[in-house]
Image 1 (cartoon, rainbow, N blue to C red):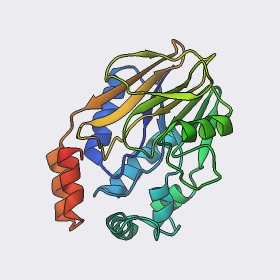
Image 2 (cartoon, rainbow, N blue to C red; image 1 turned 90 degrees about the horizontal axis):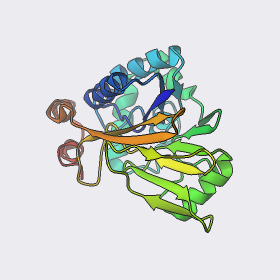
Image 3 (cartoon, rainbow, N blue to C red; image 1 turned 45 degrees about the vertical axis):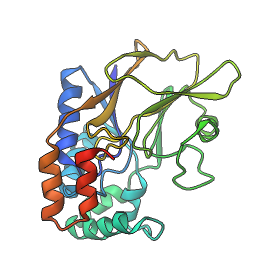
Amino acid sequence: MIIALLADVHANLEALEACLDHAREHGAEQYAFLGDLVGYNADPAAVVDRVSQFAAAGAIVVQGNHDAAVSGASCEQMNESAAAVIRWTRQQLSSAQKSFLAGLPISKRDGPAYFVHASADRSEPWAYVFDGLRAAASMSAAQAPYVFCGHIHEPVLYFLGADRRPQPFIPEPGVPIPVAGHRNWLAIVGSCGQPRGGNPAASYALFDRDRELLTYYRLPYDVDAAARKLRLAGLPEHLARRLETGE
């Protein structure tokens, strides 16, 4: 079974559709959305509706911190532009769409795989897995061969080395990585809807569970259309520029 792994869509419909089209063309049979469907971009209602269709068909969908903020949690700890988009997004969504976001689980286990937005270690809410120490905490908490997550916006793969300490690996887009199930892996799949690291291409990954292969992808999409929608909505200008530059 091939599973498409999408994180941090962030209300970017153009990037989402590009990733879904690519996944379908490459044989995806299951889909996992790893949180933050909304925030930062201008198509929250359309994205929530699209993902809810996949959820109804059996897709795995977990909640991200932006989803939680839109559906009622505080956004006080977010920076001002992120909080401004949260407040705007609340006005764009129906009660049913907010209820969908509010009802999402924080994590989901499916066989050897554990799906979560941030860290499986919940000692610190929405912890960023930005180094080996954080990766070790998440992997230990998950107790699963594979942990798939987002939140960081840049793709990276951690694996347990001979010293049992997680080592980071920066994947090459389009190159399958053997991920044998007898080892432990934590895959941050990058951001579909707000890529960073100087590369504006959308990021997502495909996991071939049967062949134990993980492939990361970077895809072009209609960045101009997504940025134009941001500007027309009157959302912070630097968010449009971030889409255009990937910075």
